[in-house]
Length: 212
Ligand code: DC
Image (cartoon, rainbow, N blue to C red; front, top):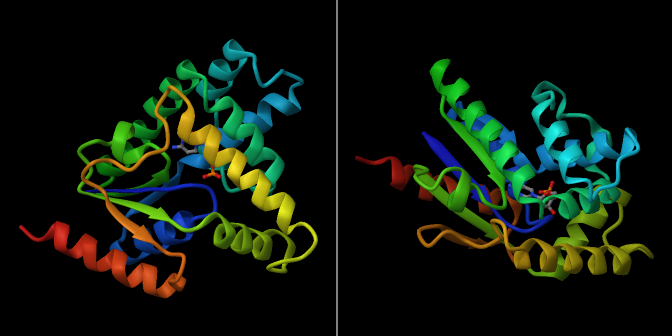
């Protein structure tokens, strides 16, 4: 069983994916973290984020057991991840590793929840159920501000909002696997929904998809 959870930055898809994994006893992979880890490793090694060969090599060597590092959550690394995510060969390398993660889970008798931008369209087009989580840019910036700075609308809110809009634009307009809902995805707009309400609605859709 594969649950695909896609959506723009700060839509709440990560929180939802984690809760779904715990609820159904599935492995979870936040694929945004694979792009973030490559961007962080390239920066630490002094590579330019435009260096395609270095990006691919870094992806092949990526340690998937170290994706939990809190450093990877920063807006700066998110920006770097969005920049390298336009490189088709890097995407191919990471997609292969994301599929291998789910295959590994299956070998251990588990399904998987993967969240990202292209899970339902590219990584697992045959996923058991596909959810596309979205919310207005203003609401997403408010949530991200709360998460990163502990306040919903402080002085850094406008910069966060501008950054989110820029990432939306880059993620949606790139030629390789742009951010878009799969034709058969359920779209969940969480602008007016609590995290609990979004989780409840998601389990209803997953339960429905699992019925024979
Ligand atoms: O979900 P996130 O903010 O951690 O993702 C960081 C960047 O990585 C995002 O701006 C685009 C890229 N990304 C992607 O292109 N495809 C994915 N499946 C996941 C993330």
